[in-house]
Image 1: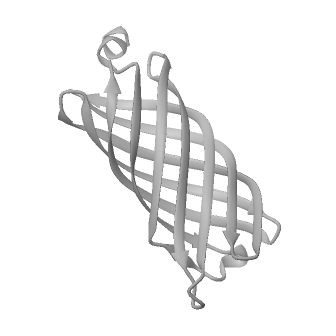
Image 2: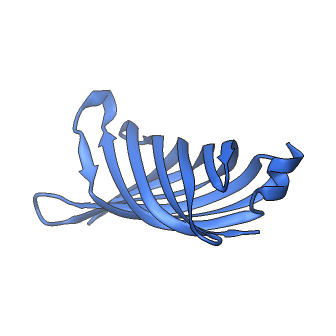
Length: 158
């Protein structure tokens, strides 16, 4: 473990494109949010464990040409499960809030997000990130199951 900790970055900052698919309460009304972004910051706490904070917005347009948004803000823990060279594979568990908004209506609720991803070195401290997440968001209308894909990049602080 000491060799892992010595080579691992002290923290990262990353951002990129997201695609989200949401399944409504009872499995009804699947919706896709084809445009979105997310940004995340990590800070190594000890060994393979890091604290992580993340914010992101997923958007879509409905039939009435109205813009609908899901805003998520999360915090939690990330654990590096594998490191090969400077490529790092991780899992994470986050908790926070998700806010649904459309013209004339908005609501917020507690959300949990579990995910896995990889940081792949590109050049010096720069990396590409691929990540997939499962999110469970609780709103007044019920619970929503969401799958989010993230593709982006970032910078590792050594």
